[in-house]
Structure formats: C-alpha cells, structure tokens
Length: 254
Image (cartoon, rainbow, N blue to C red; front, side, top):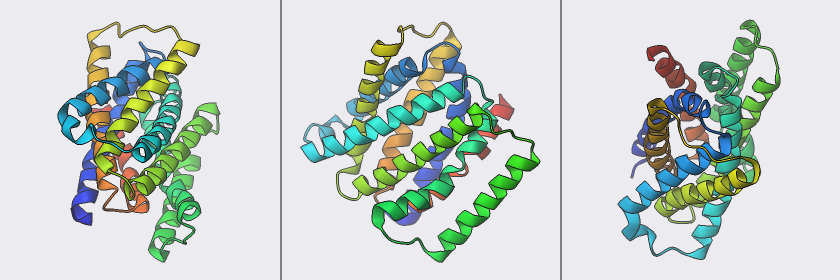
C-alpha cells in the first residue's frame, strides 16, 4: 500500500469519525458513558472478527499485549468524549478536538526521540495560532467542558502515536480488531463498577449505536491501524484535524 492510499483511507475514516459527534450526542442521551463504550465496541469487535476471523485466530501474545494497551487508551478517551458530549455542542467539541494535531508531534518526539521536520513544526505553529485565534475571538470560555475536550484531544493524540508505533511492529489488522474487543471489555468492567446497564430507549438510539459501531469503529479503527503502517502519526494527525469540518457539516445537515 502506498502512503497516498493510506492517507486516503485515513481520510475516509476521518469522515466517518466526523459523524460520530452527532450520533454520540444522540446515544449519550439514552446511555451512560461506559455502557455506550461496552455496546459500541463490543458490537464493532464481533462484526470485525466475523469478517476477518481467518486472519485473527492465530495471534501472538505481543500483539495481544499491544492491543490491550490501545484498548485501555480507547476506553479512557471515549469515556471522556461521551461525558463531554452530554453538555457540549457537537460542533464545539469537534473544533476543540482538532487540537489533536498540536499534541501528535509533541508525543511523537517523546516516542521516537527525534525532532519532526521543519514543515511539520511550521504547520503545527500555524494550526496552534489559528485555533487560539478562533477560541478567543469566538468568545469561548475555558470552562470544565472545554478543558475536558482538550484533555480528550490529548488522549486521541496519544492513541494515534502509540497505535502508529505498534502498527510498525505487529500485524496491523489484528491490532485494529483486538483493541476494539479490549475497549469493550474495559467498558464492561467500568460499567459494572459505576453504572447500571440500560439499553437504548428509541429507534434513534439503536441507529446511533449501529452507525458508531459499524462505520466509526469497525471500519474507522481497523482502517486506522492498517493505514498507519504505511504513513506517519504526524500526517494522520493533520488529516484528523479535518474531523471538526465533517462534524459541523453533519450537524448542519441533520
């Protein structure tokens, strides 16, 4: 797979993730955060495993360990994502999560111990300046929702960088599928510890879970792991910065 094809696939995944803000907003109105994680990623894992089971049944313990780490990160970042969408507008959250593009190069430096190219540094500075300008010119206040959104963006960036690191070492498809299973497993543990499980109460709730599981998770995160084997975390971070554009577009259409 060429770098261009990999980036194109990641762009398609980003379009799917752009819709996740809206459908997550619908879903969290009916489900608790960890319950949504358990159902969403559990369904995504079952679908992905059913499709690719021949390539998944033989897996090494190192891949399982890496998938477990990614599953923990995924569960944590989506717990925060679900919580913040209970109170914030999807377009606002999408805009704030675009700060992921700022944190990816920073985490990459710590992971690789190498400075990014000058073009990446310049792009990051321009992006930071633009985001800062929009935040303050738009009258956005630094309340708890904004801070939690930025913390979520940091978790997304960390997941991107760690996923890119593991995708270079292990089977990317297995990595993409098994992390969904572990995210669901950790979601179930947290759900049983902190929540009482309740299913969706409306057809919109079920549709939202279906879209989140199939398009945003089974497709999105498997594509991410496979594509990141052929591209860099920094490039995918910049593509991910388009996510708020698509989230605003989907919100406007609906």
